[in-house]
Image (cartoon, rainbow, N blue to C red; front, side):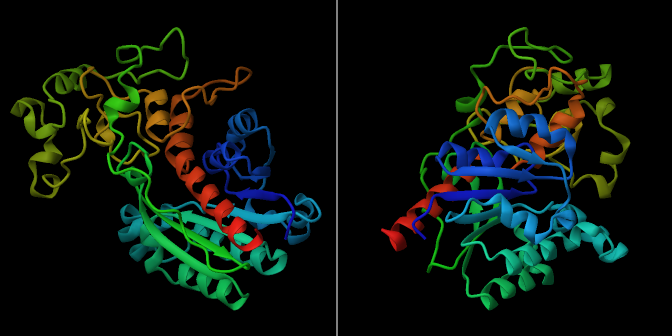
Amino acid sequence: MSGKLTAVDLFCGVGGISHGFVRQKISVVAGIDSDSSCQYAFEKNNKSKFINKSIEEISSSELKKLYPNGSVKVLIGCAPCQPFSSYTKKKAKKKGKKDPKWHLLNHFSRLVKDVKPDIISMENVPHITRHQVFKDFVSTLEKHKYNVKWDIVFCPDYGIPQNRKRLVLLASRLGEIELTPPTHEEYVTVRDAISHLPKIKDGERSKDDPLHIASVLSEKNKQRIVQTPEGGGWKDWDESLIADCHKKETGKSYRSVYGRMNWDEPSPTITTQCNGYGNGRFGHPEQNRAISLREAAILQSFPEDYEFIDPNSKFFIRYIARQIGNAVPPKLGEIIAISIKDHVMKYNG
């Protein structure tokens, strides 16, 4: 195992985790994803091959051929997390487990059993640990002689300006493997991350950066955000502006919607609807608008020059927001890459 570290990224999206590996000089030979809209950003920023296929369509022989002969094979991936999130947990009880996304981790296991990569990294939401599909995944790894370690990571501990918790699993055939310890005692805040960006209004786009664009607010929402203090929400409004659903007992618990971020704290978790003022605490701390796509990307720890917009295709704000919200924070990808490099150095010398 003296060869070059080489990774393939399953469920690669726009390349969040891959970019972390690239920044740590680990070669990512390919990213695989069923969403073709991610191809431009993945290839443009990572100089790597994008394979537009679902994991069900990837054969073991096809995956094997992606790795150069003699390389240390790393397989990384974050299966779509919607079936395992706390938001969809109640729906899952009603619908059962018919969502095909439940089985994606089983296909990950299939490729592991056949290809036997040297090192594996899997990232997902913490709730996945409560499900049998995760327990089966770990059992498969252990059965095939992998040393497995997983942790629930609080992203601010690693310099990511976002209150995001993620499960990170590492597995190796070399020996015991673990995630590098937290790197930040002082958290990176929203102010640290985005306060330098040019001011824009709702519906406006920066002339210098097409991704620094904010969604249009309705007249009522403009009135609402004006009455929302930093860190506040709909409970701070005049009665006339409060939605009927929030006046009911069932709606009073939804305190995070229509909220503003705090300057001096990490942001809330960036989701696929992070550009919408009414979808969470996504109001800018002081400007009367929701955060822009660029601000959301920076809070996800993407570099400020990361390119998401294909100049030869039509640009849809909601598509880019989804790509950003679905991404693994690149800085978390870097931490995983550093952990793998340190691990290989320990056992290979």
